[in-house]
Image (spheres, rainbow, N blue to C red):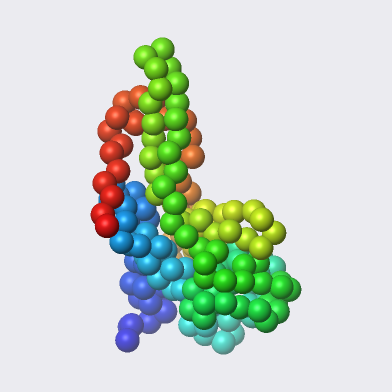
Length: 187
């Protein structure tokens, strides 16, 4: 299927993450393209551990202790795959129990300057946790991507390390940036 673990990581895991990042950044929303791409990236990231050679393959529990977002990622992947989950996980009760807790949102932020109001629209895939809190799936994916980059580099599997920035659009925007940001919606 893939030549080796490095190829699997780059051609499947990193590629799926970048595909979702690019779709998230695109100006087209609708047709569930963001959530579909996010779940593909989440699944690739979560299942990477199972592809590691046995001497380097940590347990799910050990991985969750080093990267708590990996536990959340596992719950997201399992809820998306099975619709609902109820069994205990290494971190205890699932952090979400149903696929309906994963959804796409368009967030519109309104700013005000001397010329009046202006708006910025962004697409996000949000996970509503059972405790009532919410997490941006891209942020979770980025944390887990960076964990695996560090793990694979320190294990000698990767010859160099990258840091993937969490470039979710969570910073104040200028009027010019907002005017350039026009979201198209497909039905």
